[in-house]
Image (cartoon, rainbow, N blue to C red; front, side):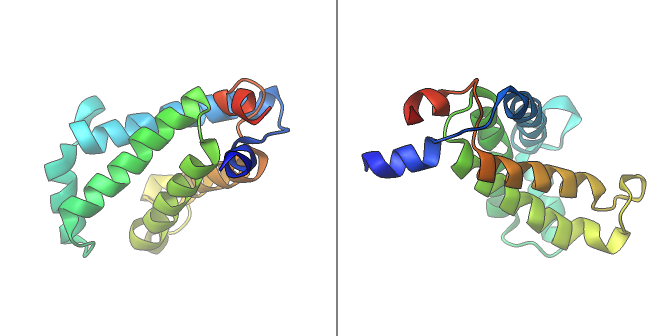
Length: 144
């Protein structure tokens, strides 16, 4: 188990990745809070569930809870730098689902509800999965 934990938390990334991780984590956590709690002008779990059902993502309540939890708790994990690789996997999956099921048909640009923004968040998640949490993280302390 110790070897597994070390492989998950190991990072050779520097301070730049830490900055990217923290800002992206705050962004994800805010989006998750919109979905789960209705904060920041969001629709909350019931509203997101209803919308997901309307576009064919079922069961809506479960999918809304999964997406919101991945974004909120995964975002918080990025902010503190704890278990960043597993969090990045869940966030990458959430963004890929968003791209395929919602944004792809609208084209590239965010101004038309395209996949541009979700793609960038997916890319950052993939980079964090590869590089790890960076110097300023709890993962760095655990993996050392």
